[in-house]
Length: 458
Picture 1 (cartoon, rainbow, N blue to C red):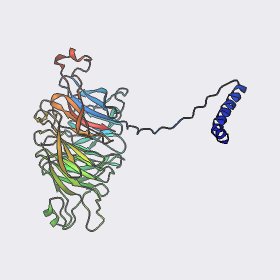
Picture 2 (picture 1 turned 90 degrees about the vertical axis):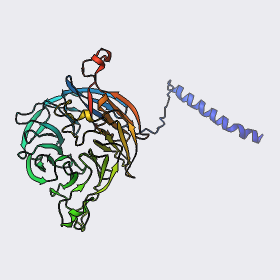
Picture 3 (picture 1 turned 135 degrees about the vertical axis):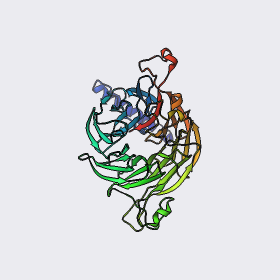
Picture 4 (picture 1 turned 180 degrees about the vertical axis):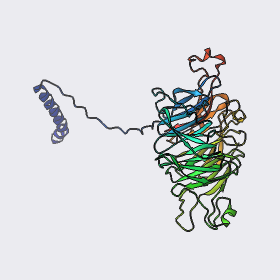
């Protein structure tokens, strides 16, 4: 009997508790239900981002097409000016330089709800070929035809800043970490340093032959100038505004003979006809695409220090052989992979002559390469290629290191690449030439615009 009592006792206590709850609820004439939430682990929030593809249009205004990074979906299109030639980033804004010299701008992450503003250039400017941003968030354009640059704020050109006679500025380097911008002057083989505090030229720095591009390190401490004429890269210290010298007796890249003279300007020899460079903040490297040969040059840029003996200066790590002539390169910010667009364009092709002076007279038609090179950033060698389509001239990567994006200019498509598996996840056609044509079957020959440049925002 004792064991039987013990076996039923727990059940009796449970029934007594249930009766008590019912009686208490009845006293208040309301049965109250208590819901205790059970927290569940949430997934990582996907960062907001858009891959923006710039397309030129032989029959009217060009456009930008937006692919949502997190959703892999078409986020919208924006109409810009006729025959656009360059897509720049300034904070959250996209700036498009059009073939008629106007500059279109809008909030890049709001392609459907943002209004496009158009800045009309002054009569004192011509030949706008590229642009860059500054710590103020303003956008500057390089006006190669009139040897000056324009400050674009909002929907207006607010100031014209002269550089040097016959300078032919072609590129601008700057970012939010530095209160100066660096203007690449191809005609005079130098770089103009402009303070964005008062927008005046404060110094001119000699560089190599026919400089074509420049990029600033993420921390704003160094600017790397690509010299197409002699196949070199020079690094500028932005505190001293000098070209970083070689350490005495130390080889600078593969240019050991230059270091026989104490502290000469250091020219790092890369490949033939370089046209573009991408700075990787993770590994603190510079990747340079060489259009005259099938190679990507890798420059070691970490730990640069001119205050120690011997000085720590940038140097060439390797020229990586790839499967075609590259025109563009981008590195994942997790330091694992690098992608190069193997456009196989005419040697020397860059932003000044890819679609200029018009899409039909530029070099785009020569860019028949179909491959995207996949490079191991640790092993410094090509691991394979992806087939994108004819005219692979531009590539960029997402900030979450999950996607790469490339254009196939000659068949009017853009590709969304899954980095984990190195496969083309989705392919999107560029907008119709007639942007008002909502039904493709009603458009003449279903003609599409020509995509030629991609930038990922933010």
